[in-house]
Amino acid sequence: MNNLVTLGEFVIQHQQDYPEATGDLSQIFGAIKLASKLVHREINKAGIADIVGYAGQKNVQGEQQQKLDVYANDKFKTALAARGLVCGLASEEEESFVEFTQPQHKGSKYIVLIDPIDGSSNIDVNVAVGTIFSIYRRVSPHQEPVQIEDFLQCGTEQVAAGYVIYGSSTMLVYTTGNGVNGFTFDPSIGVYYLSHPNMAIPSKGTIYSVNEGNYVHFPVGVKQYIKYCQENDEATQRPYTSRYIGSLVADFHRNLLKGGIFIYPSYAENACGKLRLLYECNPMAFIMEQAGGAASDGRSRIIERVPNALHQRTPFFVGSPKMVEKAEAFMAYVGS
Ligand code: P6P
Image 1: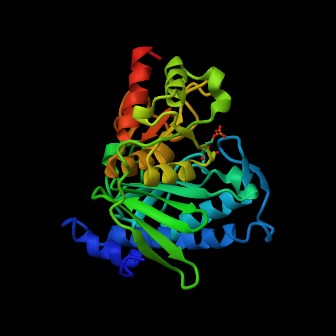
Image 2 (image 1 turned 60 degrees about the vertical axis):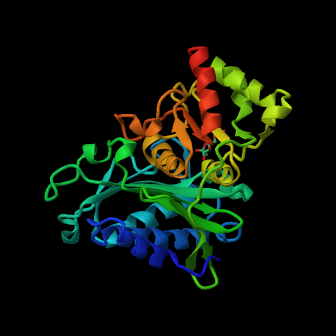
């Protein structure tokens, strides 16, 4: 551990980087930290407690809701509402945004978008899953009820973004626009310690991550980029290695540490791709750019996309800048 700085201390130390910081953001991180510890605990006993399997409901996406999805959504929502600094929340598990209407929420200036458990279908097979969150200032009048436009902001307006990966260890990785830092959870004393200061992705890597089972349905540009990754070329260290976990946070985190590219393109029935712009791609794109990487929809910068719906999807190309650039070149060349 790097000189035993805790997440709480780090957030407070660095809130001074933002003169307008009033400590609200530090408290919001406190809520996220607390909820993530509860989710960590449940995930680590999912195999034994009666939390595995379906909650018998379907979420707004029409997907079977895992009990842990429901549990995690509830804990993050409750923890964020309890601090009265957030006026509303949008979640993959909620059809519309949720307005916080207690007296303590009057005048609160932040909104949060969250995917409480991304990759939940992996829980039962013991594969790493994650939480992804994105924080904005509200844009509607502070004393009024929160509005949909508070949630439909460009990713460039994010105040903070982060993810928690519940893997061989639990880590929280976040940015407030001043670099990326990673904290590893020590469950024996319930503390997150700074373990990965100033995270930076290698400008190029040798890992490509895409679900090749959908290959026949991919745009031609993606097919050609995959073939490029597989060609023999010692000078550019090809063929690259294919690694696909099927859990966005896990694939993203591995590439952030080692270098690489993750692609979830549009294909067949998923004309806009599968991943959600607001609470999956925008926060991960903000983090990746802050770590020196790149994130696009195959053509244009993800965080500049103007959202039009809470649950809208987007193709997603993210990772080492030189690899994303190469994949975009294939997409542009064949116009698909
Ligand atoms: P596929 C998990 O269900 C998820 O939302 C992401 O975490 C992951 O990257 C993607 O879907 C995997 O999708 O179609 O390859 O199984």
